[in-house]
Image (cartoon, rainbow, N blue to C red; front, side, top):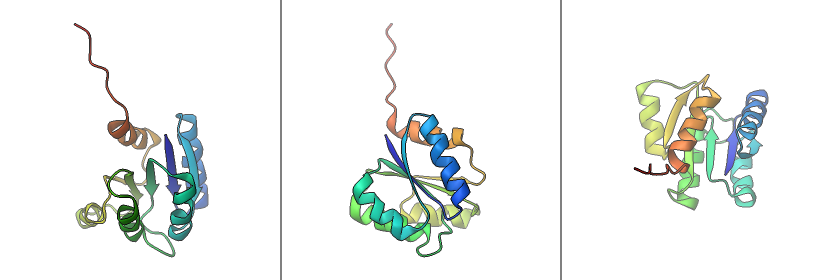
Length: 125
């Protein structure tokens, strides 16, 4: 599964991209919204982990642009320092599926990805 990581903090973005690779995901990393939209067409991610406080286009606008271009299929996870109820509501309104407050653990991000993409096998009885 392909996951795009977008964060203007280059260290955090690269670290998260590497951590998700170690978890078995194919990753790409960008540091602003416009670059993320450009990368989207060539990388075709199944999911994206987006910071909300991006310098050129905030994560809310990026999520809306992704939803407009790609519908509901890609999983969008907000990983942000914005954690108020109003921030969560705004993220939902912009099209995010999940909202994690930094420092979000890799485990929490993987859990959100697994909830959407991992099919459970029915037990045999």
